[in-house]
Image 1: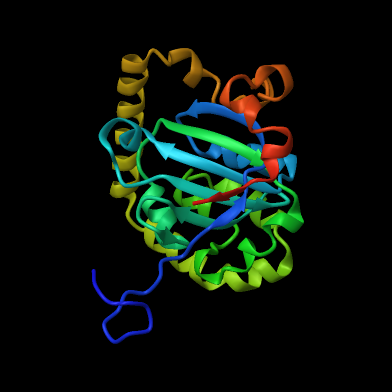
Image 2: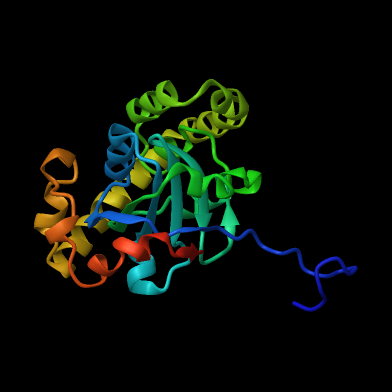
Length: 230
């Protein structure tokens, strides 16, 4: 692509998400992103998650996502491969698992500028609906969201959910594909044990302190304040 931003025919600068690296809370492989969303909601986490689907890990796919949270409620979605943001990024991440997920805590003040990026924002329950297909989690997320977030996202979220739920055959096909591919990849990677406890977040020991080793340990301390540019 040629030209400069502002010139006729020039490119439009893609959105850029820049936030502090934060403190690593956990790093794991999951078959369902709902596990991560539920954990963030239960902890009232302010921070972000990185989500890398198995097709990106194995086949150079085009989805590598970042989801930010404020008090456990998703705020922004961004695909670092395609530079898509908001609902478009969620749609690109809605592919069969497993997923490599890392969860980070960041101070609310450090996310304030990023969360002002309207182009990257998503309705509160959109991630639970589109990535996890979990109506109960979506409802819990709405209940936890501030009123101004609900007012902004009601129309868009309702339209997206209605269109998705209207196609029962598509939903079942997605579920079956996800189950089959998760089993296949788990066998290939030897991850049966890692996937077996997805629904039990309480038993997932958080990788902090002595559990965070190597690269994880280096992300603590002063490094937590280093900006991460996605």
